[in-house]
Amino acid sequence: MNNLEELLVRGDKRAIARAITYAENYEEKAKEIIKKLYKRSGSAYIIGITGPPGVGKSTLTDKLVKNLIEKGNKIGVIAIDPTSPFTGGSILGDRIRMQDLSLHPNVYIRSMGTRGHLGGLSKGTYMATRILDIAGMDYVFIETVGVGQSEIDIVKIADTVVMVLAPGLGDDVQAIKAGIMEIGEIFVVNKSDREGSDKTVVELNMMLDLDDTKDWRPPVVKTIAYENKGINELIDKIFAHREYLIASGNLEKKRNQRLRMEIIETVKNKLMNNVFEKIQQKDFDFKLQEVIDKKIDPYTFADELYRDIFNKNL
Image (cartoon, rainbow, N blue to C red):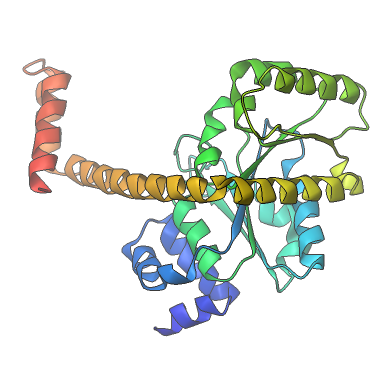
């Protein structure tokens, strides 16, 4: 192992930061690190925190992490933020909101921009999660951007998905109708000191009772995150879901599916890189001008481009 890999295995924060930067930029160095240290991964339990904007996901994550580090755990947090169209960097800055946590020796927090990647996650999320796992984290939290229905990608990477809602935002029932409620394995009504929280809980339970086909019936937990209320109960539900997954064999199935998606995502990103490399070439602009001049249609050009890239990589 080189120095970076040795430091990463020891959980050194600078080594983690450098390795995740490689992952975020989708550099080959990140892949090389994971290839060499892959056998050390597989121990971290991954918890997804998702839900509409403004429901208090970051505050809830902050309290959950504090609770778990008090129990002696090492925690990694990946906060997926919207990307600045000017710098390409993340713009919400969850590290600022969790600044006191970031100084704790057993916590590593990283904001990652989506960089236009659909589904609520960043392109480098799989690799970043794997790096935190290799670095010895017991739990990895992934907090998504909170953009609504497009956040279903969290299911592909998390062991337990916590769906966070809040009363009075006007989007609770709409979220249920939109179908994103199907991805939650635990539901949280945060800011439950607000008027309408009991109504939100009732609506959620009614919707969940309609589906009796699942072995795991998602619980609904009321929290007031900024007052640290309901956090212990929520952690108990997360632990209960983990025990259910282990006992039913679904944890292994989930992780096998995650590996499948990780491989598919890697292939897709490699193909996309080849596409963008081709787009940067002069002959692309020449051919594009032919489309503009209507000498050729865009679909024929796209088919030719596809065949060119595919043959190149046979």
